[in-house]
Length: 148
Image (cartoon, rainbow, N blue to C red):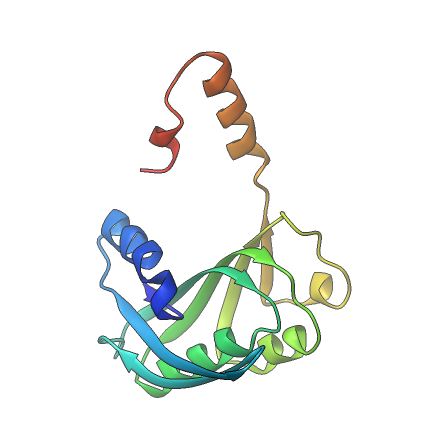
């Protein structure tokens, strides 16, 4: 499991713990808005399948640079999962040209063309999670059980 930046490390660590995976992180710097430069991969990704976990993907600059850095550090394959797929500007082209095998996103933001036609982008529905949350609230059951 790979965090694309220092801010997402706790999220990636929680996922890694839940699935018994190791953790890596991308050390990056921003030289301006929506401009990221990947500096280092911290952690061992050699001969592993890496999954980058992020909350949002906008222009996909960080995501695709992270994928390239991970692949350059010997990963067998690189996947990504992101909650919110804004996918503005050059995002889809960057994803298509990147070493990412697939990026899984939720349907919190409807995909427009060309993102909807991109073979590397898979959308999953949050409807079952939201429905289960509503049912749990109605029945006074625990919501936290859904996320731990």
